[in-house]
Length: 450
Image (cartoon, rainbow, N blue to C red; front, side, top):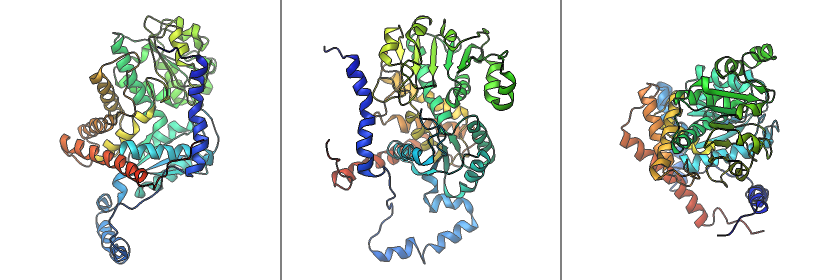
């Protein structure tokens, strides 16, 4: 068997970016709007537009909920971003963030059958963002907040979840946390450790890791067994900057008060000693996490360096340092711990019961089903979560989320489990077939080779 060199691995890691710079200008965008109704001849526009369209308009005016039956609101969400924290690139602005939002829309459609408006907006003001999303509600069935800087992302999400009639979701918080928890469930199972006993380190105290605490706790982890680090060191209740945290970073201060029962203090690397799991969502690497830190972890350590586009340490470096299981946020390495495994199916299930919100318990239901899909196929060190190519993940996830929404009484519709699966399966399959047909007929051309 051929040994792969570090140089070859690095070349593989760089290739997606090189291909992206070739293909983005070729296709000039990744998604478009196409008709979904019959157009037998131009006379059909009298049905779809004036004068016929006046009748559904009048029906909706009498019963606002009929908008879900007469328009595509039932299957449409907005992906909303101000471009202040795009991937690991930081505040690059809304225009520079638009390729990410289009990519998000593409994944939503292909893997979840969900239609998307990618909307980048020209304000960083959290109050304006909150007001703008609230005003947008009549047009869409849900909103996916994306790439918002902290700490405002917490207030924006919490306010909108409390005040909106449609589900509001911040994928960098709930989506990432859901897939991380799925990975932790199976990784701990593989190394025969218990969730409620595991010592867990969250390396980085941004939106993803802060929300991961809530979802981990809902899945059975003990908050007291969690240690969180940020750029200044380990979070604890005696931090010298406690006043600033209390005033400006409410969620981070809450973590200082409620996590880290061991009372670990000092530099971030000190948190690794004796840890069972390290979940990193911090500064892209390589070299952000040192191999010697991993060597000080407990037996059979689990390491998830999830920064994008480059993980905090390369997977092969973590394995050489003794990590038993390694997952990253990238699709070109084993164990992709990436929110793309979560949000298509979660929104599919949410929309199919017209849920009013997405609760933390719905996230845990998705995480457990995601973990179960991998477990059903047999867990391995390099397979603790399914890959995006296993598209059956998404209808199963959708059903689990929809069932939890109905159980929690946040749904507007209450179909049977069989009907939920059939609907999700059909919509997701349709998206894939349509895409394949467009390519087969040359309507989406094959790009030229370089």
